[in-house]
Length: 142
Ligand SMILES: [Zn+2]
Image 1 (spheres, protein in one colour):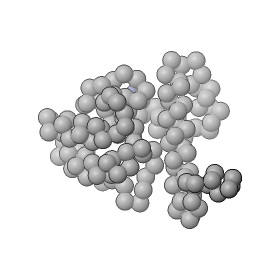
Image 2 (image 1 turned 60 degrees about the vertical axis):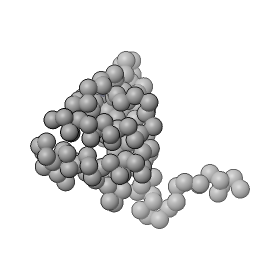
Image 3 (image 1 turned 135 degrees about the vertical axis):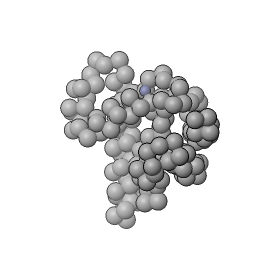
């Protein structure tokens, strides 16, 4: 579906990433790519709010585009395969994840995105509890 591909590309162009390709491997075909949320805001658009067909996906990306524009550091482009692996890895304890990725060619990329995701989720939880995480260092050192 051409409109969907174009819309997806429009969303992905709003990220700071130079190329529209998977953050971990070199997949670049738009059909195989998606946007990974590092963390969810209360008003975040989520995939399962929409129907699992082309119409649903069109609605998803047209709703998502503003969020991507506003929080573009909260997203990474991943391919479907790498995303499935990331979602599994972030649920593992750190040492198990590192053992799994040790000596794997794409290990470093996976490790980085898992860390980013886990940290962003922690920050968001702290924020919800009213703890401000940004500027914490300045507070301690001033
Ligand atoms: Zn990939």
